[in-house]
Amino acid sequence: MERKMIIGIDLGTTNSLVSVWMPDNGIVMIPNRYGDTLTPSVVGLDDTGQVIVGKSARERLLTHPDQTVALIKRHMGEDVSFLLGEEVYRPEELSAYILKSLKQDAETYLGEEVTQCMISVPAYFTNVQRQATQAAAKIAGLEVVRLINEPTAAALAYGIQEETDCQYLVLDLGGGTFDVTLLDYFETVLSVNSSSGDKKLGGEDFTLAIVDYIVQNIQVEESSLSAKDRIKIRNAAEYLKHSLSDHEEVETRIQLEAGEQKIMLSRFTFMRISEELLNRIKKTIIRTIRDAEVKLDEIEKVILVGGSSRIAIYKDFIKSLLKKEPELKINIDESICVGVTVAVELKNENPAFGEVILTDVAPHSLGIEISKRTSHGWASGVFSSIIDRNSFVPCSFEKSYSTIEPYQPSIQFDIYQGESLEVKQNLKIGSLTIPLTPKQETQSATVRFTYDINGVLLVDIQSDETGHSVQSVLIQNESMMKDLDVTRSISKLQEIKKENPFESTNEHLLAWASRLYQEVPSHYAYSIENAIMEFKAILENGSLPLKKKAQRQLKDFLQQMEQHTIDVLS
Image (cartoon, rainbow, N blue to C red; front, side, top):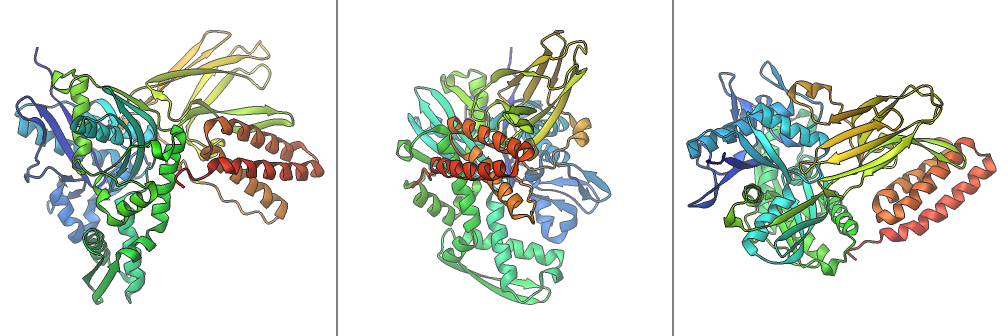
């Protein structure tokens, strides 16, 4: 029986690619209708109002900025919409147009219908963003056999081509996302040890830093710039960014409506205006290494992938930071897509690829909201993790929880994804309610989380008394996308200014503790959690002298904990 063709897709922020394994040619990057392997991830309208994708749509960014949409991947899973002509589109729908175009290119090249694919996603994509990617594929007429993390795919491509056993760090700087993954490749086992990322950091942000620099240096008010002027400035920023990869200083001229402007930019200045971005990159790298509990000198290779790895100041920064020469031996544009197809063929048990065992990890912690008893009363709004970040997947874990009110008729379980101890700072991804037996004063329920290889969550809750259970796979199809509440950011903190110095101190201590909770190794996090809970309970129920004493004790404790966040790169 002839197997179904499964294509590999790298659905990127800036460009997308599709590839396939051919018996006579190996892994082939499939060309689009223009003969290019890179298809710009841009969707727009032509003069007749028809949807266009790729190169043609990108060309109209300058001339018809109000009829084109780029950087779609950055909005996957968000409750936003885009107006093209008279139609409103969600990010999933726009991504579906890109996937449909890639599907058609593959069918033209292969001469047969294609209905299955494997798609790469940033390792730090949330559950909702992964669902959105699956929904986009479904709209495009594709069944996703698996979602694979981008750094893992790049590691597969590197491991297959280099055939080297070692521990290495993969840094994936794409157009809109940054992922860091630490892997072991030993005796045909590719094992992901830890992964972290920043889903709002990529080459586009370096471009925007230059855009801000240009706007500050030209004698034109930003509010007076037309849409076309803004596009011209952005294009100039892209030119400067790329040119600085080969030159120490570059110059360009921009013809704006108010007249011609000359802009000069050096690598030194580019580094200065990108300092905040580079610090975010450093923070993500440190977190990945710390989570894996390894030392810097134990990492044998540093691999750069993603199109934005060409940025000179980024490469120089990584070399200085990690004290190693980063490697770019594989094609940074194609490596992820190549790795996806390698994963496809490993799934198909293709003898040409040998036997490689692939293990991956959960990029985020998953859990529920609970109230926790302390020596000073109940603390509410607490995140109880059931699956910790960097747990090997697929995995399944369960915990039991008891009611806090007598004779409760039901329990609602609110499910969250994130790393903060406070649920309000994490991402809510669903709710389930289970009925109980009101006749019993205290009851319990067991919650089981199962995280599959695609990073999609199955929740199963069972009443310990009645045996009644509820179950939900947290996947929404395209008809349910509008019901998702995904506008909250995982890392966004609520900044509440307190006029009372005492309250301000409390706010500072809790923010400090919350930050340390996410940064320290897991075996210290438990102590911080208990300290936070005790402090909150004292603030709610204790006397003023007890509160002041608790402030001093928590401050001393946090200063001790701070030493466990020492920069592992120093």
